[in-house]
Length: 284
Image (tube, rainbow, N blue to C red; front, top):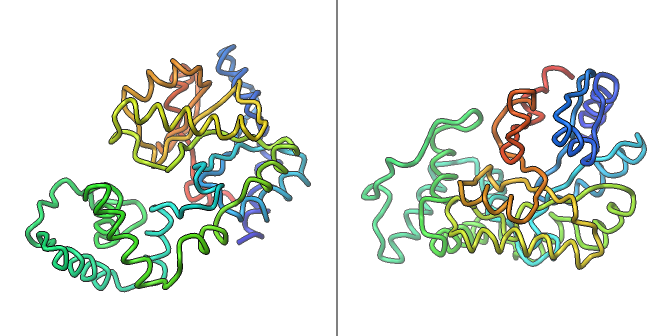
């Protein structure tokens, strides 16, 4: 996989002008799209792979990128639900068995089984997942209440992976020392919140706490946050989010919508689309 990453970076270096965050902010402010095709590199979630592999290779190539870790992962105190779900799905390939375990937990807590739940608001269409996988993700990411989701995910995590959260967190995410080293070497950091919540499901004040407290985290490490940017967890945001970004002088925000930044959408700097490497892998 690291060889694939190096091939991708080499291709991008050869065919694109690689922008820094300040380059992108200048484009937003001047409204001038560079003549040469340009690209802005972003890395989400704060994985330790970013420190071990991405950072050294980018430094070697003398290019920069922006990293968006939820700050609680950097403190190695939590494992994000999205990652717990990922590793549960990776470890247990039998999706029906996972759904059965969810049912078992609901019955144990004297709650309605899945067969009696109204699952109509779950979107089971996905570019990457089958219906059972989409259902598991939907149930555990937003369908159940936050407290119930957390309980079910932790139940599945311990049962299927048999690992403690703190131990797993240190194996999975970067720590403060590592991101400070990256920052000294000209890598940029922005907000993906504190806990990687679905922001559109939060009240406005709760969203504001996610933005303010994640920014304070980097300021307390000595990072300059005058040109701060945001990457929405799960791409999740609403009108409250946009008004908060303006209030707190955030320069731009990134969604999970697939697409390029061009003259048409350049003014929409709080809802920029991105390409996932899966979307452009055929080029490499």
